[in-house]
Length: 143
Image (cartoon, rainbow, N blue to C red; front, side, top):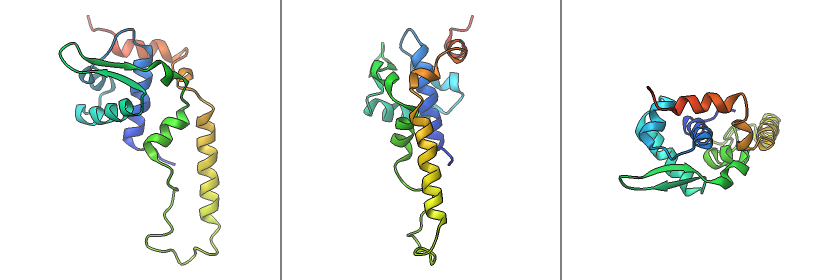
């Protein structure tokens, strides 16, 4: 299974904001992650809507991770961004093997196993040593 760019950015935003002591701006995160600002802003909006980020508008605005987000599993975030769709679409156009195909079931089981592995990893676990200090350096003020 391949994750979309939005899911990748979402996980990295959550990791970065988890190690920060102060709120960040979209511009700061876009620079730290080397991703387009507009794309990152859309991801941040989805994360805020899901309750994983707290955002404040205006001159003193910014964003920070919601404390309860650290208890989410990586699998939950992936499902939130990727949806529950199957790896293959056997319906449009209708596949002539639909009734006798074993591939669809095998791919469904593989996808479930993939997500089950990610369900075992809390976001909090992504920022433990040795990753946390490296993440902290990415957003440290440049001197």
